[in-house]
Length: 90
Image 1 (cartoon, rainbow, N blue to C red):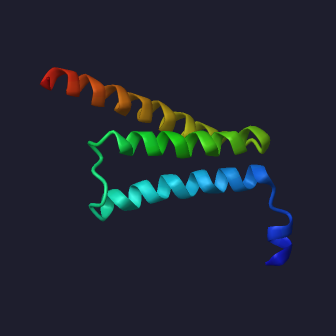
Image 2: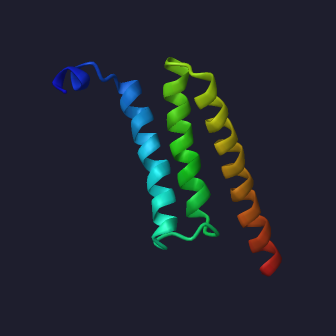
């Protein structure tokens, strides 16, 4: 196990932290700690996905890059949706 941590690069750590952020956001919605309608949800997902993409740019994997690309697009749509709906209610 120590060999694993000795070989862990900063790029791996950034990507792993991004994965933890995305999973934590999903877990928080399932536990009703975060509402998927709130602005925080797509922002947190966007941050996590960007960190994962950073690591994928160093250690490319097509399938992972595709899913993160879609995750980023969906998060950005969610951010715009939040502001669009908020401006309609004002």
